[in-house]
Image (tube, rainbow, N blue to C red; front, side, top):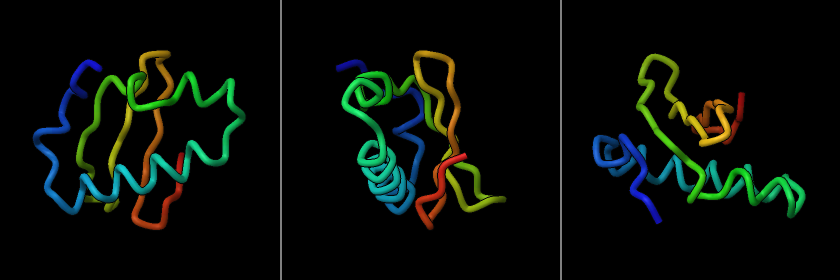
Length: 73
C-alpha cells in the first residue's frame, strides 16, 4: 500500500480520529463503494484544527471531513 500523504504530520490523537472515523465511514457503505474508499485509496490527509477535523482526499477526487463525532462531509 502506498503511504498516505500527510499522515506522518498528524498527531497521535488525530491519527486515532482518522482511523476511527474512516472505519465508521466504510461501515456505512456498500461493498462496491468500500473498494473506492478503503485506506489504499486515500491520497492525502490534513489536520484541520479550526474545525477539530481531518480533511481527507481520495484518489477518485472525492473529499471528506472526518470530525471527532465521526461526521463526514
